[in-house]
Amino acid sequence: MPDGARLNFLESGSGKPLLMLPGWSQTAAMYRHQFEGLSSGYRVMALDFRGHGESENVDFGYRISRLAMDLHEVIRQLGVDSLAVLGHSMGNAVLWSHWDLFGRDLFSEMIIAEQPPTLLNRPHWSQEEADRVGCITSADELLQNCQALFGDVSGDFSKDFLKGMFSSNISENDLEFITEQNLLMPREAASTLLQDTAMGDWRDLIPKIDIPTLIIAGRSSLVPLTSQKWIHENIAGSQMEIIEAEEGGSHFMFWEGFQRFNRAVASFLG
Figure 1: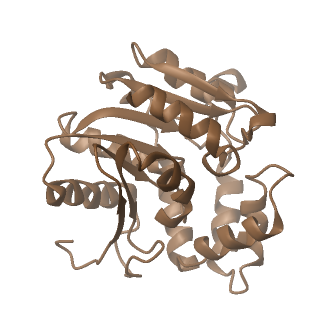
Figure 2: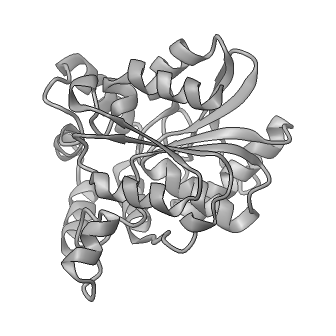
């Protein structure tokens, strides 16, 4: 990157390009079910954000706007006119920030999975307003979690934090792998980025999205379904797929319900 950060990038297959962005503290390697299931028909790519996965653990730039700039530079280096993009959780905030900074031209289709328009409940909002956009944290809770992450030398808090995002069906081996992947990111950086992510409010930008868009939601996710319905209702012409609990519809449905998730992606992209 122009500021010196070295980023890791995975790629497999050929055909229509699809770039996948992981969520907060997650890695490109966690998209292995998508590489296995989609690369026979698409050029499937995934990016490790700075400090994530196999990318360099720099000590600067842990905010959504900087990650969006990194994304822009990566797409430029790919040399494509446009490509389909898929975001999970925080990865969507990076997509929305990129749209805000650079416009629509580089994205042909957008797939949104599991990110509310804003995570943080504002004190002046009514409960009805907060519920409608699917806020999942208060300022006090956010700061407590960020403080706990900052000092999480053992990784125990991170593991418990992550475990709450999966269904009870997640195997211990899978949870161990995902925890190891998440802990590749220094906890101080994870704390900084979580706070910046939660503070974002994308309600003004989301209705401006005017390319083919698919929203994939998990019925049993900790992200309220109302938030994903709000996004669907505010992007004209968008499609929505709900992955049921018995299909693996947790927050990490691309892992627990990867077969259903992959079918939805392939059907949308054609």
